[in-house]
Length: 319
Image 1 (cartoon, rainbow, N blue to C red):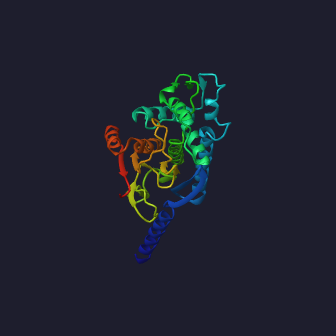
Image 2 (tube, rainbow, N blue to C red; image 1 turned 90 degrees about the vertical axis):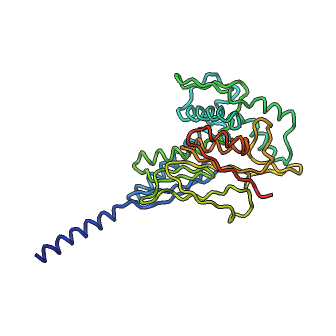
Image 3 (tube, rainbow, N blue to C red; image 1 turned 45 degrees about the vertical axis):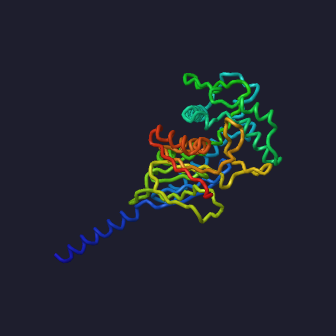
């Protein structure tokens, strides 16, 4: 009787140890992409599974960057905007989808986010290099060429038609889209408990085992000290993006301009503001974070109330 009890206890013990050994483990990875650092944390059964999934994610980011970037003259985006393009142009599924989302978000924000701001972006890149404001005539011309309605999409043939002279810039949405794609890829590999950080954009899947969510630290106030203004939130099956002028700004002719451009004025924002946007996906939160800063707190909060499952946190520096 005693021997049988010990044997059963031993079997039970071995079963518990075996189950514990099979519990998912956390693995962390980072890699460069889209001019930022992508950080991936996930739970997997072993390192081999985790590394293969992370490698696939970074390859996907590189693939999307080759499509979306406006810095590479051979990218699909640049070729779509080329003067010699013959519209309508058939495009890849990724480019068509992101343009659909971008156009929708531009309409919802009244153009505060606008993917046709390529000419304005180029002017501000030049302004940064030359340390002087864009010439007024060129600025006005760029403003006139910025209007999301210049994009026409046809789902049947997956084609895009641009009003001649339109220049696209997906910098305000591409990282969020890539983070969503990484999360989707991980879930397809049976790894739903994961989080992807791409600069100021974060896409979270299922929470870590036994926890309510992933801890994400947000810095929304525009103060210089990195130790200040950190707020920890729990994120699960949700995304958050933060935009502001804490690190990216220009000082020209005695004025401070944010890297965030108001499409209506063609100038970088001069008021100090930051905003974190919580949304169901990171494509949405990425674009809206930019738009909310352009709109300002009152209009931004009103817009958020009108959008399903979107919440915002505005912040301004102390006077």
